[in-house]
Image (cartoon, rainbow, N blue to C red; front, side):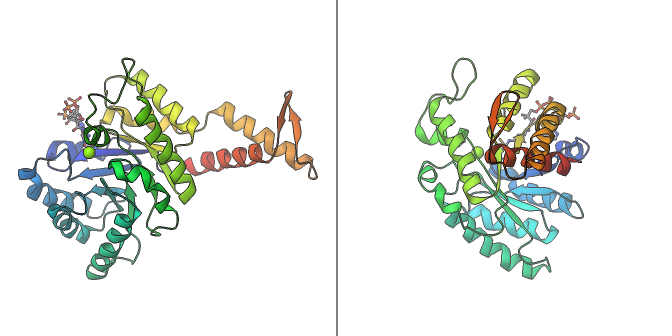
Length: 286
Ligand code: COA
Ligand code: MG
């Protein structure tokens, strides 16, 4: 389970050299929005060099319909990145098209066929909001869905995507929920978006705790200081593990029962599934 994906602008030697010591479950070397067009050729070469021989290093390419995307893929695929983060797709058709390109490049570079994963940022394009169902049954490379508010708000012409308290405005809360539900429908991980205020650790703790409560299994990060907080937030707490164990034990002890009382509350099958899922997550994290 990947809890933290740290974005690293691939044009920055300094950030690249820092990134591997930060403890992120995965890195995303960015070739898109955090890299100026002029710096892209150099950034592609740095990314290729950086990825070689490393695990859990992803690349965010440019949108697949841009001239940059193929150059991005051709530059990095020889180093076999773990996966490709796909910005601004209108639907899963774009992920499927990327999958076909990856198949060709994998064959060309002797990389195991189908091993390069895909993580779409599935709400950045306004049209994408209405096509989220297309991820059900899409390419097997799909390993999760994440979302972005910045490109969506720019496309909508919004002056802001957050209210005065820093909480998402309803449009972006909707996009976030739809990403979460689409990921569950497609049976892949839901990864919450970046928390941009990278000095606000308490705010990040709250945000990430809520993300896990809601069903996200990880989150994007933009700064090294965010990684430890995110990694901790996406682990079940000792109390939650204890409770889940009790639920499982109770059902084990009452094999015929569909519903049981625990601490004065009704628990039934969905609670059992939730408890088993939480214990799986706790085991996977070890
Ligand atoms: N990955 C690796 N190292 C990073 C980093 C990152 N994402 N962000 C910052 N660092 C390094 C800095 O280089 C600095 O190292 P140094 O002390 O050796 O110089 C150290 O961490 C502290 O950085 P800090 O001074 O607090 O931040 P900054 O002002 O240099 O950078 C950002 C702030 C937001 C520009 C930077 O965090 C960043 O580039 N984040 C990623 C942006 C991105 O990829 N966006 C696209 C997805 S939304
Ligand atoms: Mg963007």
